[in-house]
Length: 347
Ligand code: NAD
Ligand code: UDP
Image (cartoon, rainbow, N blue to C red; front, side, top):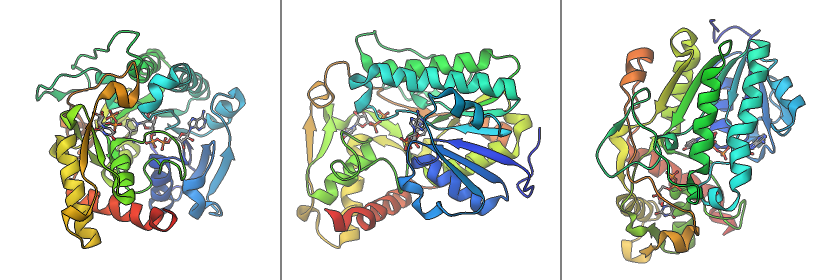
């Protein structure tokens, strides 16, 4: 298996192409390859700037539809990004979350096995589950994956993603690569509640929204949990390292994360407030403050948290010669600037 980036006969399907990661991946594939791109999603609001590109074919379709899965599997490379993947929905729409993260990926995997396509499946760092506050590096092939009880429906997503990984790995005739993102951040992530989405977006987008609206940044249970934030640009470079090395990434799972960008959510709020104040040229007293909120009150029953997630990047360095580079401060500035430009005039 080898695909030259300069070979115009190669085609790649991106399912979830209209989402945060998908829209950046489509941009990068247009810029760095001569491939044909089959972009599939429920909508393409974030890809308006590419709708008339001659190398992109768009399908407004649902992956749960078997015919859509079969069409996607006609491409020799299939990247599956489609999912319900915002934590606030895991408790409210548990059944849909499981179907989206297990049933639909499984039917796509079976279609790819039949057609002989290489499936690059997006899983999640959340498969590592209910991690403790210990400073432990999470390793793809050795770390445990422990979830909470059934009543803690927060784990529905992690469990469905984990079972999808196990199912994919069990298919003997499928070429597959599983990728586990660690909190990607950048322009176009999530939504602005009340403007182009409803509910609670992931933390960075939610803090951007609060800053723009002059509302408090809410620290769930004091903001003591920690995450390793990863620039979307590093993430796209990583996907290209995978695409360049099917021989080394076939039938392997990889973390995509930046251990140098690990901090508490409370520290993230502090950094975002100072970045926003400097972008606006105002003092810290003139912008949103922070406020503590109890997890169960905020997210509802069934919420539990991962306390700390630090990726090991040893495997990706060893097999793919890949190391993330973007410091958190740069990506925060870029993301906040994008939110100001994109939503500033509609608020
Ligand atoms: P996103 O919500 O921005 O994009 C997902 C896209 O999938 C959306 O555009 C949505 O419309 C589409 N989609 C959902 N269900 C579909 C269906 N049935 N048929 C067709 N399209 C459908 O999310 P994202 O941040 O781009 O994440 C992409 C993938 O990466 C997901 O699988 C997610 O679980 C995984 N992931 C992302 C992160 C991150 O930090 N962004 C972290 C962990 C895992
Ligand atoms: N969080 C927070 N305030 C918010 C949103 C999230 O303190 O407004 C916390 C959340 O409880 C978790 C962390 O930030 O500990 C990351 O949450 P996110 O929703 O981004 O996704 P996760 O990494 O949990 O999948």
